[in-house]
Length: 330
Ligand code: A2P
Image (cartoon, helix red, strand yellow):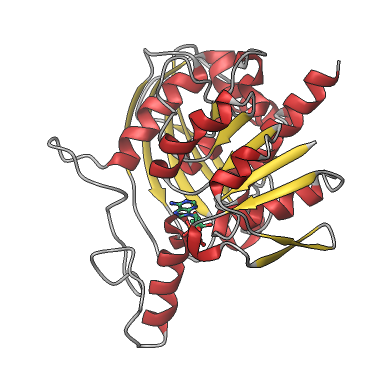
């Protein structure tokens, strides 16, 4: 089994290598690929040193799977070239997500949409993944009518640039890399991605489109405000849900508790609720502050936290590969 990781030197790519090891995929032939400036560098995987190769060399080696986290442009350019060689690409960028023929997958929810012939599979946006993990059992049981979301997204979602800008600002120094048009240290930015003509950001539009695609329901109404906060790792989300059918709160708690990959952390009497410092470096999605919204007929409030580099990116992508390897063995 040959697996290429394109963007292996980046924040998400290096986490992908770690998650591959954790999932026991250590006896693979790994092809770590990155930009020309990293070719020849050595990285550690499964106790051995591996030389970083160019994307072209990774394609020529004909891997079985290629996991991409190297930006949308790299994915658009190279994913079809891997696919032509019968390699299955799992792409973490937003480049392919909304193509109708490209499956957009959270394995716990919809791995069944992947056909054996599919060669490009998209990994959803980090904020979408953690939110739909919590919403899926609720949608199945009661049908979701409308979502009102506010996110509190960490700087690691902007890659090494975001982390570096915050670290330098904390020290009171000029950062060599900048991810944001304003300081992030001691600040909160209501701005994720680029603005459109209607005043929404690309990150907000992803939450709408990707949620509908993954939950397979174009009737779900979604409105959101994406906010960047000075947290180094872990995204949090306040999610207000309006369901079509009525629910009992204890059933919602039970359904969330039964959802694979979701951990309910919800005991206000003990000040217990999900927080990024506890979600950090974990693969699960944490849900708390589960309570009825009394302002509408079938309203529910949730607080959802996950490590955006793990379940929001690397873990989800590796889980897709693991599921496909299992399926194709049978
Ligand atoms: P490199 O380290 O050589 O720049 P991050 O999001 O943390 O900044 O990581 C981006 C990843 O994508 C890095 O591994 C980076 O490699 C890789 N990358 C960026 N541009 C390209 C490109 N044109 N071709 C291949 N890999 C790229």
